[in-house]
Image (tube, rainbow, N blue to C red; front, side, top):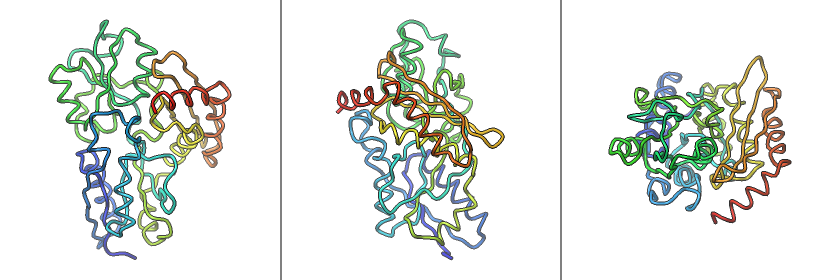
Length: 310
């Protein structure tokens, strides 16, 4: 078994927290194992003046980390799972998915305690087309705008009164110690989360059973089943980050319940579907919900959006 592992990670504050968390877990699980971090700046971190949908998608956050593994500079990478493309490059696998943090979206505002309290024309910032679409559908009187940057940058822009409110993932705020900044947690009915939101994904090169064995105790079967269903749905829809797509699964008594939606950028055309299935076959559930959305016309809507953005 390896005596030393190197984790490739982005150098944002949240990514480093996640990598340190996995490092500490591994060293607790395997006394004598040395785990080091290889910090990297990805293309997604460098391009901050354009929406991700226009510059190549969320894969921009993982490509350099995968290249480091290919070059034997690192053994594994720790990702926010919602940033991981639905189809991994050949030769890579997600070998462990630890227990999920709160997957819901959060409202952060210095003046307002709920979305309903925001007045006509209030400016709301978020980086996500998914969140933007749902906001426009429910609150058409709001001025919804794109907000990029790391968590600290987004909070600073809010504090400088560039926005009346911003929407962020609850998980990132809680992991970084900013839970007190949350004005309201948005229910899935208000803002359905992205596939994999709140979960971490540990990626390695395929064909490395010794490393996979070291990482196996980190895997949480319930979280893994939920996000597999969500990702199977998103993979079938093939929307990437170029379209507003949400997918959220919960587990109870050995069964999964999955909700999904696809919408246009304005939140006018919205398709929703949900179903239950066995936890032992999450991919089948994801495909069923994805196909139900396609049967409603989601595939045509996605094709129009991709052509429009591209």
